[in-house]
Image 1: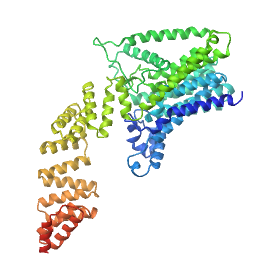
Image 2: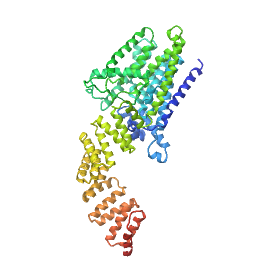
Image 3: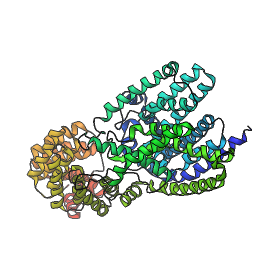
Image 4: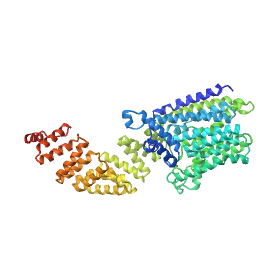
Length: 637
């Protein structure tokens, strides 16, 4: 076979994929896991030997995937290094992260092509069709366009490279190639624990290649299965803390229905590309506690599909292989155990779809290469349907890429399809709140708390918005609702205390400040606000204690010396006050209030020369000084 026979389709695949995903480079971060993985992750933002070691010895975001976190850290380094001026102050631009995801997807497309090319014994069209559908299917947009889903494209890169290594091992029986396969498997596991299904896929390949399931075959798989068990146990231990739902939420029968529903719906969406969403909520139970009809039909559909595949064993290995590849890849995400708050996710189909697309590619190709079957009679119809299907899914995928532009487009899309998905209102409200679009944020939070009235953070956010709008009573009511649901959140007590202080309810404010400090001792923001409230109350001795604590913690803050000096002045401790104002001005010579207050103190001591000098200095930094005050000092000096 001449090189261009396979290099040309590979090049065309890359071009099509690039133009499909290129718009994502201009997208931003979303507020769905991107902050946890990147923007608010100090170890990613400061990638060094210590933090690399941390990623290998600790989970991140309820998962163990050190390679993924390290890759994000590398992107963060280059993204911030390339930023300049004001852009750098706002954090990294997202383009670098999106570009890496797209490049990894391009590599994965090539690896799928090579894998199928070798598996099918160099049938170019089988490889081309499988890789094309993998490249452009809209179910894969989530894995590529979502920065936090780096783990999908990264683990797939090593996963597919490992499968190619295994096919080479089967050709040459070289233990070195088996070792390379094992090392690539380890890399895939370090990128995402979902790679634990790798040895099952190896068994499916053995079946397709007609290998005898002898003792030696099982022995060569022992290291793979052993490693899968280890990583599987690690993942269960990590996710059992917060990612796995309570076993009592749904019955075992319902869980079985969820699993078969996922099995059927992933296949349905691969073949009927419709109604894609970043979030698929669990179904709402009927008044009698039942599920929608499709969940009761799903086990039957799954059994029928499995039966048809079983019947095909007599005629071909293709359906069994494709079915096993699809099933094994999905096995861990079919919600036998409820992980997260979604019943399914497009990203879980990223590798699993290869099995389905392989079957399609195989039989379209066979229609043109074998003249002794029915497929040959309808080969052009098959080709036409394939072309139309490819154009359609490419258009749907292109539109789906736009959905991931930012948090607003993402969650608005989810709401349009699943208005009962409460998390979408919360996240869109957070997005509007961060941009200070308070009206839209408040509307989303109100919908959210109606759907989920037991989330204390939502009521706290509502309180923040009312506080910004100076609607004090509503803010206090919202904070109180939040505290009733979660009485150990120091941030909520702090925000309510600040609001009480605005309302001049100082005693209640101090009580909340003190509660916040009990929950989180030494919090600078609490001390700062509490000290100022005490100053306003006239509790100058208590305020001095708090400002002294703040000065000890942050000695370079001139405002703390200014405020403590004011307390000293009110207690008629003029020398202590002057000392604090002097230290304030040493840190910030342009502090007009310190200049003016020093002038007043020196005037009280009849040192009119210094009083006049400090008054002039205050005026020079645009501090409001009455002309009559200046004139009086000038006449007295």
